[in-house]
Amino acid sequence: MKKIASIGMVAVDIITNPAPALPAIGQCKRVDTIKMYVGGNAANSALDLAKLGVPVRLACRIGGDSLGRFVHGEFDRYGVNTQSVTIDEEAETATSIVCLDPAEKNRRCLLSTQSNDFFCADDISDELLASSDIIFLTGICQLKRFDGDQLTSFAKKVHDMGKFVAMDVLWDLDDQWLPKFKEALPYVDLFMPSFDEVEQMIHKSDPYEMVKVLRSFGPQNVIIKLGRHGIIVMEGDQEPYRMSAWDVETIVDTTGAGDAFCAGILTGLAKGMNLSDAASLGQAVSAFCIQDYGTYAGVKSLDQIFYAMNSGNMKPYSAYLD
Image (cartoon, one colour):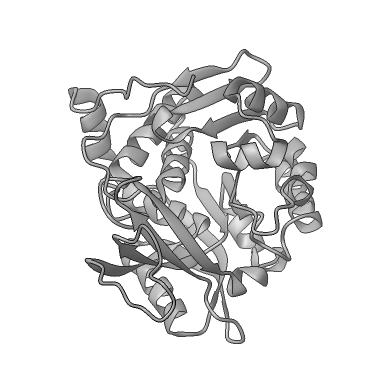
């Protein structure tokens, strides 16, 4: 199996449930649960990959505070290789407050980004690159020092080394979008943003038009994640096609669903699957993820997920976005 490096954003997620709205100023509101998990795209995908049994290394930056120690402890607990995790004693670990809305089956977030703001190309070791076959760059648009020129230079470097380069973005708090990553896309083999992000970056809402516009920017393959409506895939210059999400009877928490999809599809590619089959695996991993709280608690072993896919226990969700 090919080895994967997950590179980019890491945070702590403090998840409150239910929290459809904030209380008025000066007031308090009781919630059922407040739980803490590791979050951030690179961490989520790395933890998912480790739970799937895939060799994974992580490059990120965390603070030297108690939250950073919690994050590092979770990496150690699940077997993520942390030799390229930078501990910044001067920075606070990035943290998000996630407010779950049980009616909408979705979330709202408040985010502090400090440790991610200082992440840079120097945090990624040559040893990590030499020992990895697939390079996953994720959390782009929330990595202040790394976004833009550093990202482009690094993507070109690993592309020229013959690595498979995958990329995902995160909601751009500065609302700049394309200037932060567009120049890197010609060096990317697989670009995997979400529908809401693409809508903001190119101001279009038709998935077929969206995926073609993104493909014109240079990535070899593009997948747009459409939530419960599945994905749309464009392989090279072939016509785009849709794939359904796996149906889930009870959605508990959608936090990390997209990162679980990325972990699943990269697992499939690492095992030599074609893109379509790998994407189906990604959908299945995401379906498991949203049946528990946090970004990785619901993800099972690869054997368990394959069993569910092949036993008829998982069925495609039939609705499309059309």
